[in-house]
Length: 434
Image (cartoon, rainbow, N blue to C red; front, side):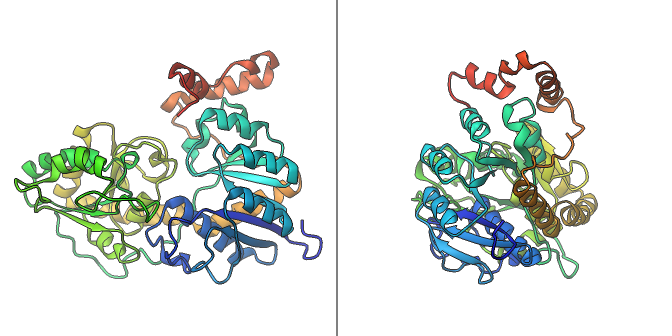
């Protein structure tokens, strides 16, 4: 704790070199069209400072410090190693960074002897998890989803892992008046890269049209969500190889142009909100791959629109199946779920209302700031992070087995050498993990 101020001083590293002109001065307005990791880092720091500036001093160390919230203290940092050094120089008690394998950073943390939080918006590969577990300066491995945390129950990283959902302010998303919906509009929201699964929707769109000819698809996002420097293909939608092989074959007319029922809206900031409010169905990452949280699902539900996606990972946290949206595990279920909501507007409307309350209650930015304060305080008091209980879907992802192995390893020391399920999967794949 900072001796002069009596406050906990925390430095957040923000890698924002890919968004030199993104205006994130007002996080309460929502994501202006940048990566979820970057936006939630800013929002976390912003709300922590807003509610607890009397107890916490927040510093953002970023590649670019322009157009950041004016209420926050900022400093330039070329990379996360530079940010760690400057955090120590600035007197920070705790340094927060996105977890990934960076040997130089790990060495620097040891040299600086600064407490650190490794925040996993994406779950690292298992060999990186092993490193995070073994580095004494890393006091907490922070998951952003409960399913993500539960998947680590039998890994040695679990003891210093916890979960804090990403913060979300729904005020600017919830419709102020009754919205008249057309009954035929589907919106996809997300980055147009393979990991975010737009090609799953593209390849079934004509099947949806066969059964619902009046259906219309609006696509919000491009392959530049994570960096404005990425080169796009002929349609200006995604990287050329992905666009040519996984998008255009399914959504082209006889002249090679985008079919009439599809509109690519590009990168949108707050102007996307009206589109999401008027949509009948919102689709996010139908593959479910890489999702530890899925901010897009939260944004859509906050707008009063039901979500359709995959019954996997973070989407099991951010969508309530059968209440705020529908989750499935195949192309057939993707088509079925979209058509069901388009053809049953009364149910879709009820899902939309449920979604607004679900988001407000589960992803409150006030609760997020409170949990961050508790975590920072625990670290300064040399306590292990508090852990929420395991979710009750025990058979998903062999969760019951992971928990059983955790208990056995804890009570029978010789068993601790048994690899976790994640490590076993990595070994079977012949690599270091997914």
